[in-house]
Length: 105
Image 1 (cartoon, rainbow, N blue to C red):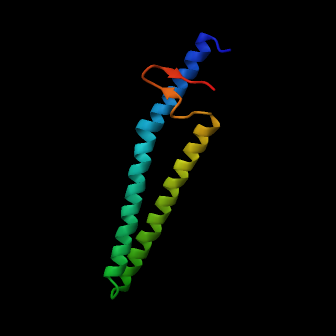
Image 2: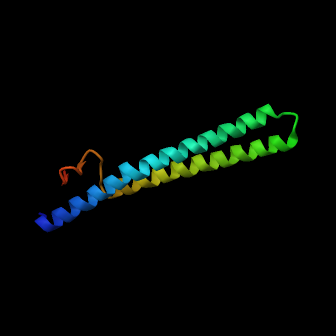
Image 3: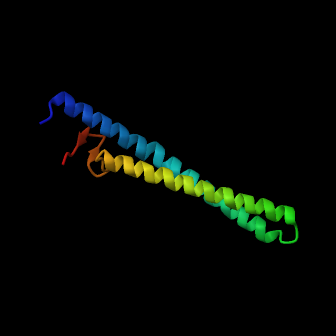
């Protein structure tokens, strides 16, 4: 059984992690993921629209490669964040930062 102090510390830590995840990291990951997809698509268009110019085709290939690398990194960050939250046993359904409560299992 938790004491009130330990429960409050647990609640504030879980609430803090939830807020950082939902208000900062998730939107940032989605933005960077979208930018990587746009960069990849730009490389695809650059590659196909410049079939007669070898230098532009090479540039398009590089943009596609870096876009894929960016997408892979963003998916990796999202996966690692999910693993950390699952390891700590934190579910977004269990945390209510407005009330400062956490449903413990």
